[in-house]
Length: 344
Ligand code: ADP
Ligand code: ARG
Image (cartoon, rainbow, N blue to C red; front, side):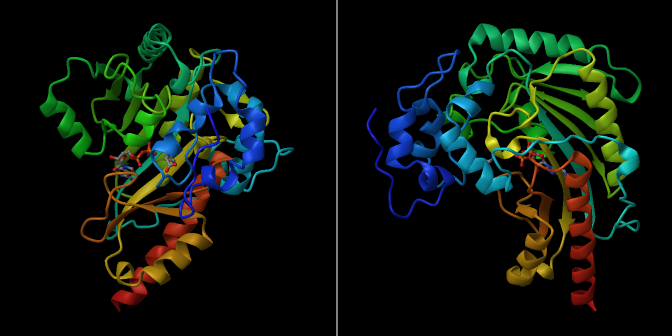
């Protein structure tokens, strides 16, 4: 492969940090799983409108291709090469009483973490056989869950289109055919090895073999963030007794996209802010101050509908899980205050 043509107007972190020198240094390297620089950067080259543009094929990608990944990680998370990540999943340390007890603004709350199974390649480099093995070991582990977490696994293969679409529309299931994942090699052999586990109430869900091997999700209507966090922590700890997750002292939980490293946590609310939405500058000033990200209500790369937004923490690495949720909580309190003032 030759140094790619990176257009002047490309704003992704890949375009920013893949200098000719970095490219020359890394272009012939291969991880133990056979993952190359060419594969790591393909998504960003095919999708020049990417925000980031790179994916890791395994934990080793982060060290072998460090001249590229470290720069991207530092830019996105403000996390340095010598820094150490710290985890804190202790619900007692969270201070997040319901910011909207009358249910005027918050439609629903969702907290997810990404996890990958130790000693396996990540999705971009995994073989079909390995992926199937990951699926069966996760499904086996989920069978041991009890009480509120008890549920069933529904493989994508054989699921009717109607059921699949309904689950997507209701915000429970991942979408299909994402072009960023596609170019990263994450959609190979679709839909084999993929599926969703959930309890009866759909307040606890696990996505299997999408962007990460597990996406563990706790969600419910309304703004009781503490309850959602507690359920998530109980589930993560229970699953961890059965499946070893890929974790490094430096980078925390290992994920296929560098934005998810560390806590791999995205804590979000769907929140109605129709007045604030009329002044995007004021809206963004608040979300920037609290390190928040604004998404549309059908997830990443979707649009808002009826003034309802998906507001979540943007930082994931170098802060604890408790801090990630606290970022979201503090920001949501400020957003509700601003919306109320505009409504007067
Ligand atoms: P991820 O959260 O895994 O990074 P997405 O942004 O694509 O991925 O969101 C996945 C799904 O979760 C989407 O259907 C999205 O609308 C839904 N979702 C996210 N936050 C909430 C929330 N607070 N309430 C209800 N659904 C949500
Ligand atoms: N690869 C896409 C981009 O660079 C998504 C990055 C973050 N989102 C994610 N789901 N990992 O824009």
